[in-house]
Image (spheres, rainbow over the protein chains, first blue to last red):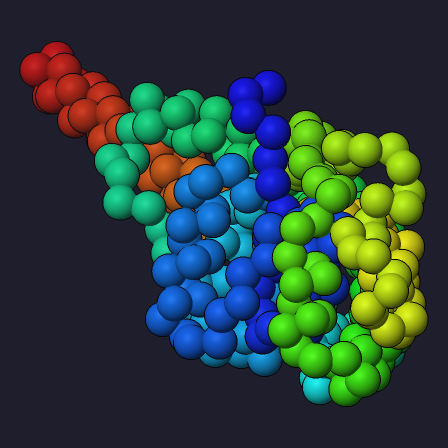
Length: 106
Length: 216
């Protein structure tokens, strides 16, 4: 094993500050271009897991899709402070639909 | 169904028969792979769903604490409190092979073992709600790591299942019928040729016999 892998959290200040206490790398970004560049940079720099708030993820859907089929990093949607938008669950349903052909959950 | 564009020769026939055989074997193997992948996928997706709702609930709870903390404390104080974390998490990543899909496995390594090290601030100037927010996050963190792992696994497996399904379908509905049809065509053509050779031989024989009769 080379370098140890790291974990990042991306989102607005209020939603992600708490994660700093756990020792995760926290990035406070709300601009689409900057988030997208940030994700690319993190992916190239040994970040294995990137947690991103749902509103932030909604801005950079294409960038997230790009990393969907590569083994690392794993990008996980988490609810922001405004509440849960259900985007994370929706991604799960999409995966089922892709694999099975129709959404058989529920 | 389209017949393949090949010459109707014995050579091609035996080649095609071999191809058909391996296509059938490949089809069977891929079908098994698809079924097994699907079974594993369904197990994972169930866990994924459960885990996601748990994690979302816990983060929601922490966010509520955070919102309260943010309202009773000044933003700067809140930021300063969380600015220099004592705890640090690193991940060790290994790979697991599920039906030739390589899925990552994460195991977190903490810098300190002390569970109280998540509180990077003194308690004198911070709200108790901040403690609540941080502690509920740290409680759910192992689940979040597992979620990252399993969500990635689900995505990768969904891709692989789709690919395998396409291959199975292509073999089942296009390649195998095409081969069968072409083999049938060549067999027919060859036996037709044989018959025509036989008849022309018979004809020649007749002619030769007739000639020899005339001479006598």
